[in-house]
Image (cartoon, rainbow, N blue to C red):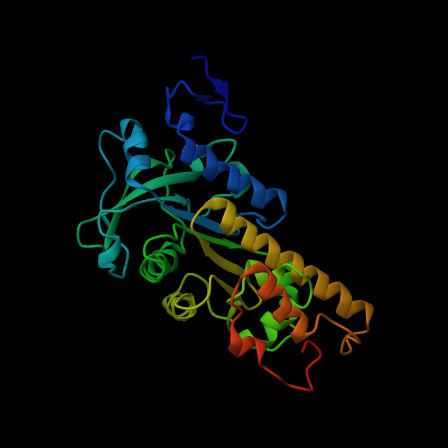
Length: 301
């Protein structure tokens, strides 16, 4: 069968004559492209990792390096991720270049049989290493694999401007932040009924933000990083990207509404009873702690 040209990297889909014809690589590149198109990845901002399925590893294996890279200590140990393979963006690489030269901007890494080291088996041909936040991603992949019985495979971080803007005006707590988002657009409580966690400002890429995010990922699919961006997980690229997109759009609506009202308490919003009705109609269970949160002095309740 004659193949078709991949619109990102020029590989022949269907012919499988190089790794760019492998579907999971195409989908990964596509998600990077979508994030850039939204304006979320200035310079080398943001990162994406994906825990590969065994059949996807098998499809990519013929294109792996004859001699893999050296084993590198991750700095943490996750036994439930031993012998796994991940696709990762490169440290210092620009996501806007991923669709132009995937081989120089992303990589496939293998985890050792102790769950504490990685080595590059494909990609970053001009040198480099996985994203500087790989330890954070790695820790959170471990948590999300455990709490979702292996369903979650994507971790995505982006510099979403309206979410960042809201961290300057809302309390940095899950309850008021989630309620503002839920009440900004009708579908939000359906897309993230569990709410969003909030991490106070911390140095990116360090152990503190990794541990703080892991604590939230025990409960939430998404965590706001104050003054920095958004961190989400999902079972596949569409779900993870859709979660990021929905939260950012709700934050945009909230920012516009608050600005239009002079920063004062909004005169009318989606009510708590409205939220309960939406949950009932769509068959989702809303986080009751967030739903029942009240503070009469706060504009977003």
